[in-house]
Image (cartoon, rainbow, N blue to C red; front, top):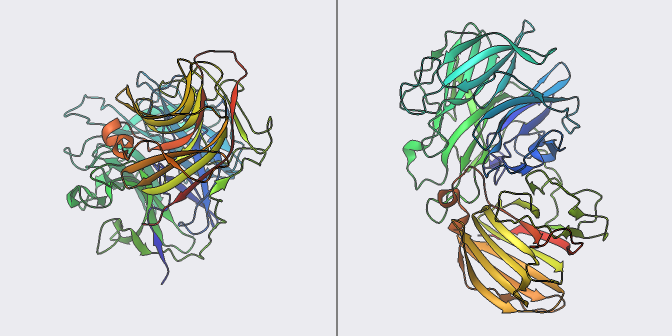
Length: 522
């Protein structure tokens, strides 16, 4: 029988929410401070996913100006009803205020509407439920109305939503506060009607090692909800920190057109110790029903790296080429900006066949909108290369490649002018403090970069364009710098191209002819 490999979406794709429309499956994930926001994927078999765009791809939908790392867009939920697709999510501001909104579309590939902001909708992780009587309900989490009984004690609440006015109406109802009081941070509610029961699936235990998925049910949408005695229905917290898949949680139940059930959820793969450079990824696991309760991966109860595939026709998509030659009219959806792009700082047309990045004073080491175009690290072992045409004109002009977890934890391989001297540098930024790991004189205007990772050993190389031998830039660097376990936050490692200057208003730029990324076999 056919098998598949987990994760089905490798790299930083957390908080999956998925739906089936006929024989097509669509999935969205969180995007935090990256723009465009909320990547959306299409599948025919639940295993092979193709990105078809982003839900929030216009500045009018998503203002991420000055948003701190790991704030921004959290935990979207995707739903479909009567020909309309709905995506509802939380925008988390720098002061940790939570603003909930939804957008709609008739085609999941877009375009999506501007946001409908919901008033008096506290908490995070909103979801929508369309009941059989035509009513629509909002669920989310909040501080318990009677106060928290223990740290991170949260309340799952429900309220009717009037789609005509875009307003919550009627009373707010507390419907569940989780399976176990020791499993704090009740969040990520998804409500379903299956048979005669309303099922409430939530995440508990926080997003770290004790993450878990629990479930409750009720004969009425407003409760009371009965927690399953077999909770949690999925967790890996009991398997220890040396297990290859950890912090399992935030799930979504989905039924195939043949009546089989599956769950998509997040988890991480630590390597080189308990270090999770790849962030939280999307995994797939089978579900069966016993006595009207779900059993996840019967007989095993855990996520597996390899498992039997769903009973659906295998439908792989054409693989994206390892190398992007920037010869299309638009950037591939694999590419992102840090925060909402402001100003005309990038172009695919000014030099056809190249990505042009104009130098901006916004630093990659700040919570601004730098001249940066990046993509996710998706493999423990990888090789990334690019070629760059750039000649620094004055002190402070730099361009190159960056591997980053956030503004304070990153590696930069850059060519620039430093106090009147032009050279190649490898800079490590750790907890906001910078160390030049290596430097080499150079005065040309065309060079190539290479970054390689074998586990947590990261290496950087450069060579003048037209030459054959790669020159090492320093020795092996400690890649654990790029893990959330050192840098904090909720995202995964990114890499990409950038350009910067200490002076504003100049027309200087760097041209990147291509960028390639490919896994290296173990």
